[in-house]
Length: 201
Length: 312
Ligand code: SF4
Image (cartoon, rainbow over all chains, first blue to last red; front, side, top):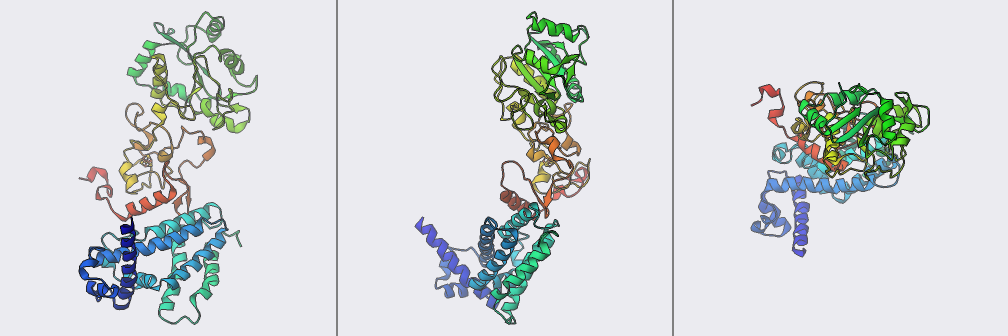
């Protein structure tokens, strides 16, 4: 049990370091020895945790997706209105982007830009299943209650993810005049207004 | 036809508020089963089948103890009030009151007799024999049992499958133990879902959906409203006319064996919220269902992409 926990901790450490290195240098310019060195482990030992660089790359996505999915799930299950949940999800996403910038950078700079790395075993929603599932459940419930307008899933999905991705991208480029969290309410309001049913305020 | 003799057990079939669909269904049973049925059961009266004796005479004989009554089959909804529903000139209310302690078994055949079904939508006093929809406030309330010690047996369906009717009666006449579910339907027929045994299971698994009725390909769940994964029935295990079923023929299951059949409406539509089904297959959480379908949709099963006739 302890062994397993320790192994998990180490994997997390590797994820943290590797996602930063990948985002800074690019997927192909980062080698396993680079990662091992930055974590302070031998290359041989690295292979006890991940079979290959591709394996690690996919794991990072699943890992980020499960963190974000878990947060969305917690908010979804809270006893507050759908509108408040939208605001909370936006806020939490921006907070995570600030707490774990390497994960978001990784998503934008590696996952979206090196699709060939993820073409087997990570295609479609396979590595981001948890985020997508939690958003589906959240949207379904909101529409079932009559809070959200009925529409196809994908337009609704990008209405939530688009602004959030855009914001962290702008932050990454260093062109946001204010701290991202200061935009949370406005973005929350935009997403809510875009999704809500006509009767809602 | 003469009343059918040489039988061990006796049966009468009466009808309340009904379209007689279950009688039609019963008459469409396979000749093999029907033969077996007639060899074991003496049908004293059925409104469309027997003609040698009138109901009033048989009824009188039963009430006077001259004829034993093993099975009372009721088709159609009934009323909790007197003088509302009649059968062969008798108030069904009275027939049921008079026979409730005489018949060994009382079997509700079809959704109307089982749960009230469509007729129950029109009046509060219209009910099934033991249930009104899923509440135990039918004609007989609560834990009512007949002489045999069995509760009312519901063979639900709109109509009920002839084999379910025949096999239920035969099992009881042979003295077999009949397990019932919470809605008092025989487990043998209702522990399955319509989905079990459907020829479209692979399409369901891989999320390949049909957009038209009557094709051989595609699952009918997402676009055409199939209730197979949420409906208790053995329609795809015991085929209709020994040959086929709705879903096999490309017609979605409309959930006609369930108590909520008349309450749902929109029979050819799966209710979606932002594209996600509001109800998911029985036994799985919505989270699990969405997760799995997402994975399935990511992959392609090439056999299921085109016309089956052209697939290798
Ligand atoms: S058509 Fe209906 S019963 Fe058949 S596999 Fe699809 S959902 Fe199940």
